Amino acid sequence: MSTEVITDSTVDAPGHAEENYLQSGKGVLSWLFTLDHKRIGLMYLVSVLSFFLVGGLLAMVIRIELLTPEGNLAPEVYNRIFTLHGAAMIFVFLVPAIPASLGNFILPLMLGAKDVAFPRLNLLSFHIYLFGALFLVYAILTGGIDTGWTFYTPYSSSFASGSVIAALFGVFILGFSSILTGLNFIVTIHKMRAPGQTWYQMPLFLWAIYATSLIQVLATPVIAITVFLLMIERSLGIGIFDPAMGGDPVLFQHFFWFYSHPVVYLMVLPGFGVISELVAVHSRKNIFGYKAIAFSSVAISGIGFLIWGHHMFVSGQSEFAGILFSFLTFAVAIPTAIKVFSWVATMYKGSIAYTTPMCYVFTFLFLFAIGGLTGLFLATIAVDVHLHDTYFVVAHFHYVMVGGTLTAFLGGLHHWWPKMTGKMYNNKLGNLGAFLVFLGFNVTFMAQFVLGTRGMPRRYHTYLPEFQFWHVISTIGSFILAIAFFLILGYLMHSIFRGKKAPHNPWGGVSLEWETATPPITHNFHGQPIVTRGPYEFPEIEDVEPAKAHA
Image (cartoon, rainbow, N blue to C red):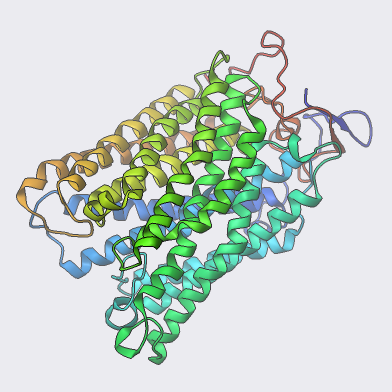
């Protein structure tokens, strides 16, 4: 194995009689005010999945509306629906989905720590997240907002209707949660690694979380001050972004995208870390190019701060600035490609197990590759001028964010579900769910690439009749996706109540989280783990056979 575990007596036995974190303190208040990182991670998980449900249902309303060229909703209602869909998916689902939920649960276990560096700060981050999310819920209940999730000025500052200030204040508050979580994770990784665990013996998931945390700490204050200035302009009439009052709307775009392009990597970088874990464990092979994958995460984090201007090729910036941002956008593909080629090389001649997490790896690689390659079209200025604000951009964005972040999140959720709950799900249903996600996603958004190349603008609720066929195809795909997600919800919930008891190490992993009991005890380890080998140095295949209780 990869570790030796020194305990108070002899060894760290998974069957130790101490209560696990699910058994101790079962009341609601004991959960809401817990300092246990595992419980906080689960509360984040329930919260982000709840908002994912809300955002998904709003997406279904959008797709049903677009079945016919004329539409049935009033324009302002449609605008509010797609705005709230985007805001819910970005700010309260995709941003915290992997770092705050899976990261909170797994990071201390992988480090061999009993908790994060600042448990109380961790709990405060969760409460701030809920408080900020409540303002978005309030915006929905009081009529919504119609600005688009980007809140572009001068419309959002002077003309938009609805609860714009409430939504902006919610985003402002959510930023503090993100900053505190990132700060907590950085300190935890620096200071709380188990003895013997050097930087190059950390699982790659931790490298990805570390790079993500740097973005959270450095970029999030920019969006916080931007929405704060917008609130001041809208409520006090001070000219900052509105040209009618002496402001500059392009300045808002610079501020907004300086944060919002790094936040793309804030969402997808943890997904890269998840995929690294799944590829190695379910191929039972040491990861290929460990240092290259680790440093590429940091490189993506850094380059991500330098390419915001590719969102503004048609906003009047100088030709030199456009050329520079185009070049840097192409450059960010290099560290991303390093990861993809390393994952493929890891799987080559590996002992691949066709588990549900591995099915999501294949889905991720296919979908994210399409998202990345179509990004090169949009990084080319001459092409972007024609495709800007069309459904091509919508499809590209979803292939990166949903095809990347969401599929990695689902893969990680299935990978660590036995450790989190102590129960196994049905692997055949899991594979079916992964296939339906793959099928439904491609049907939904491949059609939108065609729409974009033919000139269909995004955010329109009426359109020319010649676009209807592809909108119908896209809507059919969205229903397949909905079926997939409810199937996944169904068998995961079934596993909690009726699933088989999970074995100690169902996948045969060798990183520290698999050295704990299942589910982990309250303080994770009975003693102090000591790391003696790398996180992917697997025993000989014939010596250790992963449990088949999931079948």
